[in-house]
Length: 160
Image (spheres, rainbow, N blue to C red):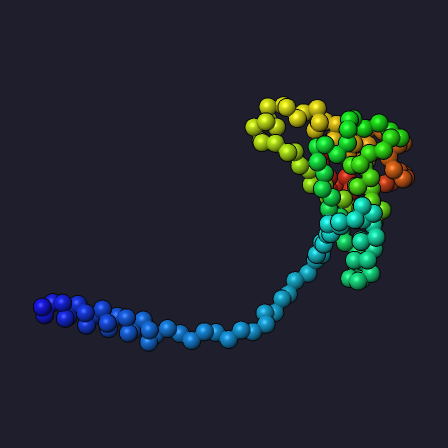
């Protein structure tokens, strides 16, 4: 019986010491931030003519966004790119470019990784890539939208 009492007293003493020695919370204060360099910002517009959103953001922020995001599906365009014909992929990317931002393409395939790896989507992927090539002036330099000498269309940021 004495052992239980000693154990209980020790347990209560330990509990009391933990409660007693809890330090008070540190009051919140503003952190000082120091740094240098550039901060890059982007936007995902819900409008087809995304250049207007990019212009509005630039007017409000006083600076232009660096990136403009787009969403693409492997099914965006019906076949391989043909110069001079409409391209949903090319137009989405070009609207961002006309808004003075570098396009950032998010690409989706509605299937499993195993099915994609099996080659089942290769034709569709190659078709979409041909539209990207046309936009970037990689295959047909004379046919890209608004192509001008020195127009690099963000080639350093985009990998095909």
